[in-house]
Image (cartoon, rainbow, N blue to C red; front, side):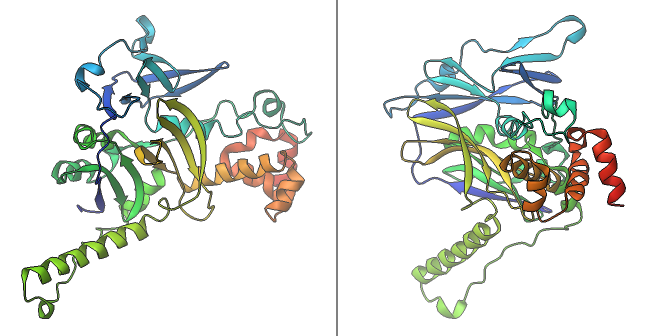
Length: 366
């Protein structure tokens, strides 16, 4: 723990040798990903990709450094657009047993695509733009990890444990992200990529006022110690108490129900992206998972949604559930139709409503 940054190591009892990950560094200032169907994902912050290699027969991935060699799908534009990188797909196969994915961006793209097409029925309240283009374009703002106070220093000082394959990152004792890989050697190589993750702006603002996180120190009971075995028992108890505390404060992600979308099958491994069951008044996370056949998590990277992002997702879910009918949605949300339209505008979706309809709603709710 350093300042208000708390890093909790995640250890594996059994290491997976048949799936390995490595970083591919990017340096361009703008990345455009062709998603197909005339859709594109654009970001000014894609610092690296992850290259995943696996075997189909549970044998170790051999000659790991060599296995990652080979052509990538990246393309660079020259001339006036120098510094722009073009990629094909969020997840792209690069060989029989290798693929490239964009960490966090895979989950964020799924969030942006949620109910992206907008109303499927030409309700008269919606604007022509909403009916013809849906939510296009749609964007979200994140802050790079280098903007998180104390994080770089904490990663430099943090002791990497034997067998460590992941970490829980808390900022002001709020769970900011979870990062898990399949092999401890890969974690050592990717440890500092937490600095290249994105974080919600309001989480960082809240952390600025949280002060230092309390240091967790368990109390030994000297009267109960008369041998080395007693001392070991006391240490085991303290470790269990600390672990239980971290599970409790991570309950906003750990143990939550997930809405999962299958993205890719890589041999015996499944690549999914997910959204936690949405709690409008609590914490919510999106992320990516790679699961082995026995459902063990071999890779995970998460992103905690801001309160504003949660409100936007919640409104879109409610609208879609009610076939984008404003009256039915307002009833489901226990509000008025006019108040719902004003709420949509405040969430950044005012462009979906016809201008004269929205103006009338704002006038009536003053």
